[in-house]
Image 1 (cartoon, rainbow, N blue to C red):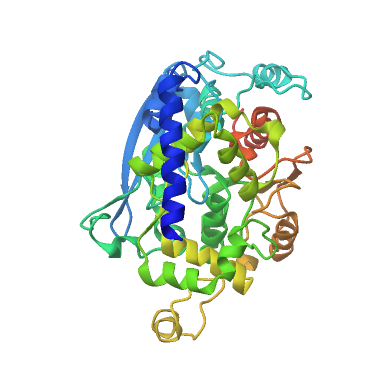
Image 2: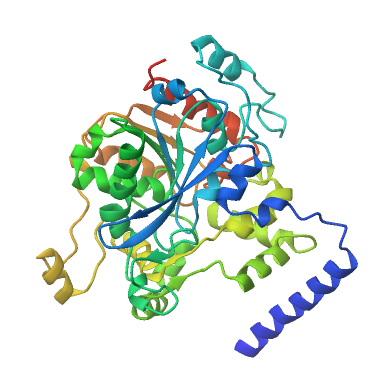
Length: 439
C-alpha cells in the first residue's frame, strides 16, 4: 500500500515538473510566495521591526511590528496598540497576505479627524461584485494605514517561533512538548507585556483568529485581571468549545491509534520544510490547483465565491506553518471530551501536575471582561455556530459586539483570506476599535 501511495505522488510530481517546464509562462509566480512576514511588510512600503520575545520557559517568539513612516507619532500615541494572533497551524502572515493590496497610504497625516475615517469607511463597494474593498483585505495593513501600532504575533513552534534558549527543535524532542496550555500560560502574557513595555500604553487591543481566540479565552479565565489590559478582545471565528466541530479533524480525533501515535512520538506537526513547500506549490497551481482549493473547503467550509484562486500558491506557501503533535492531540482531546481543559497527561502525571486525576477545565465563567466582540459565521466547520452559542452561554458577561457575518457561505479561513474580508470583517473591526480610541 505504501509503495502504491508513493508511486502516485511520484507520478504527480513528474507530471507537474513536465507541465511546469513546458508552461513556464502560464502561471506567474507571485513574489509573496517567497517573502517572509518582514519582507511582505516592507514590500508594501512600511517598515518592519522584528522582536524576539523570550518566555518564562525559555521559548523565543518571533513578533513583527508594522511601522508606518507617514503617521505622526502623536497620532500613534492616541491609538491603542493592536496584537494580531493567528490560528492553529498558521502564522501571523495570515493578516497580510490575503491580497496583493495594502500598500502604504497617506490616509492619516498629522492627526485624523472623525469625518476623515467616516469618509474612508463610506467609500463603499458593490458587495455583489468580487472585488477588493477600498478599505483593504489585509487587516494588518489596514490598521497600520489608519495609524495603529500593529504587532503580528507567532505562536511557539511555527516557522517564525521555532527557537529556544537552549533546545534545538531539530534535535531535542523536548522542544515539542507543548500544547496551547503553554501558549496561554507563557506566550500570550509575554507578548502582551512586551508590547505594553515597548509602547508605554496602559492597554492593548487583541484580535485573534480561531486558536488566537482560544488563547485569550484561556488567559482571561485563569487570570481575569488581564481584562484591565485587553481592551478590546476581538474574536474572529471564536473557539473555546468544539463539541459540534464538523471538520475532518473530528475524524482524526476518533481514530485512537492515530491520536496515540501523535502523543507517544510527539515532535513537529506539518512543518513547512522545503519539500512540503515544493509539493504545495505544485498542487496549488494549474492544473492541480483544484486539489488545494477542495482541501481548504473540506477543512474549513465550502465557499468558492470568496476564494481568490490566483492567491492559492501564496496561501499554500505560508500555511500550514507548523505546530507540535501534542497541540493537535490537545485539540482532539477537546473534541472527544467535549470540554476546554488542560492537556490530559494520564492519571499519574495529572495527579502530579494538577493535583487531580483529570485535567482541570478552563473556568470560562470567571471571565469578567465586558470588552469582548464576537465575529462568526454560519458556514464555519471549525467554529461551528452551535459552539459559538455554547460559548456565549458559558460566559457570564455580556458581549461588547455580537456580529454574525451576513454572508451565508462565509467559512473559517474567509476571516483572513476572503476576497471581501475588507467589507465583511475589517470595516466591523475598525468600528469596534474606534469606540476604544481617543478620537
